[in-house]
Image (cartoon, rainbow, N blue to C red; front, side, top):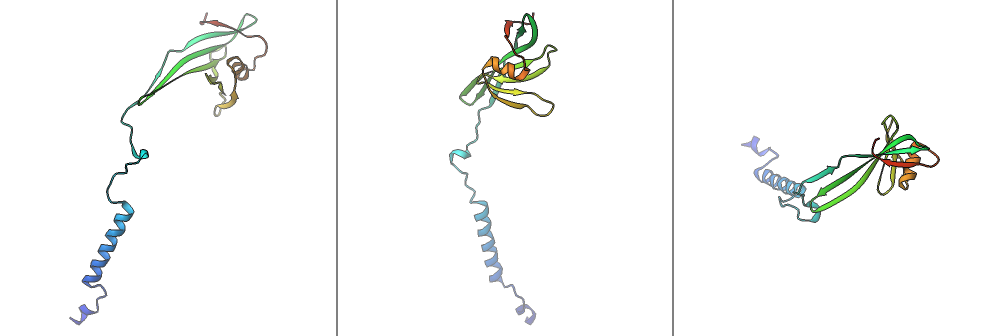
Length: 144
């Protein structure tokens, strides 16, 4: 009996520690309720992306083909919102992609590393920035 009285943990101390630990656990982990704020909602509607076939335009300078311009329509449907944008790819005469720009004029040149943003330009100026071509440009629909 004497040995039991020397024990530092009594039933009351153990129960108190258990209650305090359970309270701390419920404070840290929450009470099990689901947050109801606007940031806690999960969209159940799927996101879809549709890309049209690319159509091509020849880029000519003094009657000679100096490259091609590809145009495609990208439509993103997210919930009830639909966003459609035009995307243009700039190709050289060997049909290697050199860069891209969108309908807002955001122009990128592709390098061996990452794409390099050149700025926002008009369509023709975007082509000039990516290809480095100077002078008068002529555009003809189709590949031939």
